Length: 161
Image 1 (cartoon, rainbow, N blue to C red):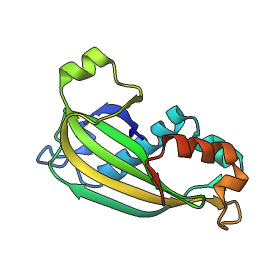
Image 2: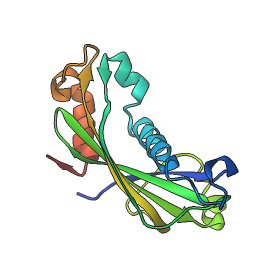
Image 3: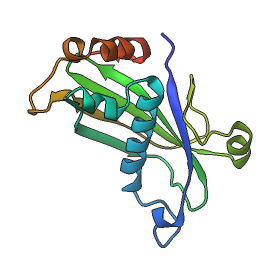
């Protein structure tokens, strides 16, 4: 099965940087959430739809690996894909990459777009692990409570646990 990464591009604003013009490490947590939210929307299972079904998807674990620094006014692409999953747990994998201004302008990649292979200089990689819960904060089997979402995960996901 070929992997599908979803790409969301953004510009690094001054507010995201420290005095040296380097992106503060905490912003990558926010960027992972942006990538995850946009990917889910594009893939067809938006957070608000999940919550309307009575399901929650809290973060259990986050892993970030810093490779290079992003800097003020650069363009970065947040690549997100579904990693390992089961009927109860779900992992998202991320890569934040520096992209060229020309690629941003010619591809109009402000919106999310699927791709098979991330491009650009790798800045940060990582993952988040989540668990499906109901409104009472009890574990929920997504294959039983939302079989359409589970089928979609099987279609776009990398692998099952």
